[in-house]
Image (tube, rainbow, N blue to C red):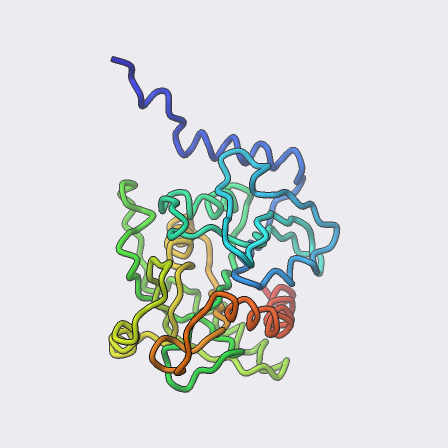
Length: 274
């Protein structure tokens, strides 16, 4: 019988192959990593002297199949700060394993990233939230029923999964720009169906302020690798049972695109300060 384990490349082997391919095109370490969620690709257009690589052109890199996610790496500078941005991401609900979902975070770490700004589109669970609001994530609830560290035996403290220093910096920056920045708890579910009204009611009682289908796996992996995390949610819709109308991905994309300039302005100013 063949030893199958020797024929399947390990995560480390895949990581080395991907990072080597990127280093042929990117010739600097990246201080800050950015993950741009649904319809939030505007910031990638602001990066100076960009090197763009499609996900499908990188060995072992997971490829996004969701509308609103361009699926490309954009590396360059902004205000003399080296950036490594993902214009789009992959999700657990696309059929990827947790290890594949967080593979880009591992690539960022290998390229020297010390801080990551993770953005997403989220549904409002808190009754005062409305589409267009920007929320800095202060904590999360993982209802995806899986963990990217499973099998790695890493016991990571998530007491401050989202850096308090970066959250304070985001609040100060938003105040200076005249942007109202809320602070809330993000609940992550596996998707890809939207939640039921009963599930939203339960999430609210458990302390969630917004809900989505991403971010949490990336945050867990980033913390395990010593990367500081700032999480920003853009509220794109009212959650099920609260708004009185059906939910649609089209609405998520449209609201994200309409509000993206405000989030882009916030992140750009943050990059100057980090």
